Length: 181
Length: 365
Image (cartoon, rainbow over all chains, first blue to last red; front, side, top):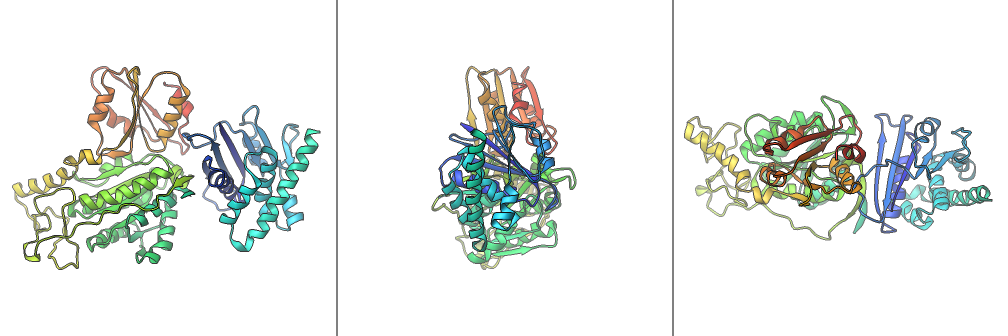
C-alpha cells in the first residue's frame, strides 16, 4: 500500500526536517520503503515550502505525491493551495493558530500554540505536529520518531525535541478522542 | 547498512569510497551538498578539497590533480556545466580521467536553480567541440546514484576518459533508503611496467585497463590539447591526426559491451515500447504499472554511448515508441535515429520545473 503525506507551510517552519524525520522513522526503523522530497523557492525563510513523504510496503516508483492521503498545513496560503488537492478519503491537519477555515472535515490542532506554551519554543512546532500525526494516523510509531530525532537533531536540542514529540502525541490522542466521541 | 540519504549525499559517499581524493568545485544549487560533504570528508581521508573561483578553474583543477595521479571529481549544475565544457574537451583529448557530476536544473542560463529538469542530455554528449569520447551515466534515484558514481569513477580510471554523471534536482534532493555495502571494489589505475626510457604516454594499444603514468612518477609526460603523437607532442600530418582521432573513438567503440547498461522489461505481446532515462523513467514505469496494456520498456542507465543496436532491436516490429522526458525532446531525437519504417514516435515532454507525472505518460499509452 502506498501512503502519501504532504507537509506544507512557510520556509523556516521546519517542514523539510519533519519530512526527513518521518521518512527515516519509517524507512530505517520500521523497514518500509520511503521517498522524501521537497519543493521550495530560492529564499531561506518566508516563501512557500513543502515536503512530501511516500511510504509503501513495496518499491516506490513515482517519488512525489499526486493524490495525498494526508495533508498538513501550517500556514493559510499552504492550506488554501493544497487543501483542495487531496484524496477524497484523505485527512487534513491544520495549525489552529495560523489557519482559518469553516471546513468541518479539517482537523485543526494547536501545534504552534502547544510548542509555544508547553515547550516554550515555537521552533518545535514541526515536531509537535509529527507526534500528533503519529497518534492520529498510526502511520509511524512514536518510538521510531524518537529514534529518528536522536539521529537527526543536534544533542543540545534533543531534549527539547523529545518533549515536543511527546506533547504532540498527547495532543493528537486528546483531540482525536474528542472528535470521535 | 540502511540509511536515509539524499541523492547528493549518496554521490559524495560513493565518490569517497571509490577512491576520489581531490574535489575542485564551485558551489551551485542543486549540487552544493556534494561539495559540502566532500569538503568535510576529504581531509579526513587524506584528500584535498579546493573551492575554486569558478567552474572553469574547477574542471582544470581536477584535470591537473588527476594528471598527478589522484582520482578527481567535481560537481555542478547547468550554468557551471556550460563553463566546464572546454575543460571536459581537454580531459578527453589528453586522456585524463575525471568525473563530472551535473545535477540538472531548469535552463537555459541561470534558469531554475531549485527546480529539476533533464535539459542537459545532449549537452553532456556534445557540449564541448569536436568529436570526443565521453561516457554519461544517468541514475533514476538515490541508490542508483550511489552505484553509478562508483561506476563512473571506475570507468574514467580504466578508459582514461571524462565520465559525466547526470542526475537532477529531483534526485539530488530526494531522500531514499540506501543499503550501503560494507565494502566496495576499487579499481586503481595501472602504472607503466616499462622503464621510463621506453614509456610512451599514448601507446598504440589503447585497451581497457592499459597502464599509464601520472606526473611525479618518474616518467616523461607531455600533455597538450593540440592533436598529438603517441609521445604527446603536437603534430599536423594527416595520418597522425587520423591515428589520434581513431584512438579516442576506439576507447568507446571497442568497449560498448562494457559500457552499455539498460534495464529492460520486454513483453512480446506489446505493440508499444517506452524508452526512458533518469528520474522521469520513474513516472514512465509507474504509468506502465497503472495500465493493463502490454508494454515493452527500456531504461538507459548509460545514456552515452547511446545503445542504438539495443533500441533498434526492441523497436523492431512495434507500432509505437513512446519517449517521456523533462526537456523539449532531447532523448526523443536520439531514439528517432534508431527507428525505421513506419514505427510511430511519440514524444511526451514536460519542461516547467515540475516532475512529469505518471498520468501525463498514461494519456498517450
